[in-house]
Length: 71
Image (cartoon, rainbow, N blue to C red):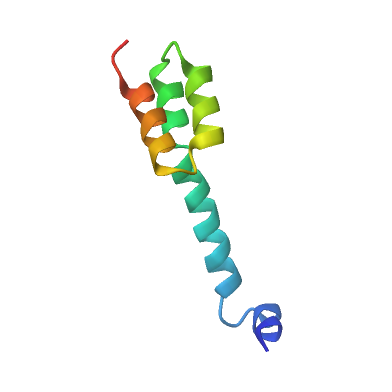
């Protein structure tokens, strides 16, 4: 039943799930984007911490703090 609804494209559930997935990935890498825009000297460290520990809230906050700290 669900496969039929998704295949027919009538409800748009698949597109909504895909959009939420992409939005989640973008939000997860906000610290790396901010660090790149600000040209912080420890950009590589921010990206590594964000990639490996960004899925945890604490790792994401640490990466964000590193991205916005003063140069």
